[in-house]
Image 1 (cartoon, rainbow, N blue to C red):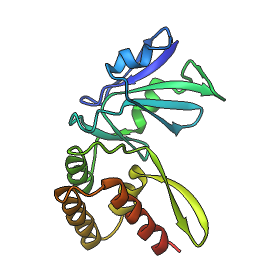
Image 2 (cartoon, one colour):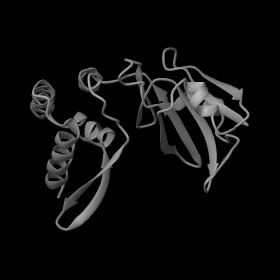
Image 3 (cartoon, rainbow, N blue to C red):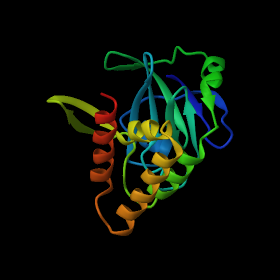
Length: 181
């Protein structure tokens, strides 16, 4: 199967061929913990769920935050297929410009076992939303400096006090949703 591989360190994209079997992706990433991100039309992005705690480099594909190397696989329904996005097109979507806010927060979160893409539920006015930590970071990244600093300070307090980081992220997501009314 034809896939595209992103090298996080260099930001380069190369086309590779892999025979997809039950353990192919786990072997490629040398990890049994993988994130499956539906960030590209008719494609899925695979990354190692350990990349954050391993201190791998963060970057964006479009507006999608990724950490560590990634594999892009075509997806039609529930079936994996050859990639259809051109290597050059994918390369043009990659940006290694990660704001200071993202860098600081990811450095703090690397001390935890949190997953950036695991979904949680937030309720606003009896309406339910499925969000994740990556959405929370995106939302607070576009906030004013004082709000970003508050977010970082409170996150550090949560970690220092051994409180649940996921509860903090869910609380921040709820606050952001309530402001967005």
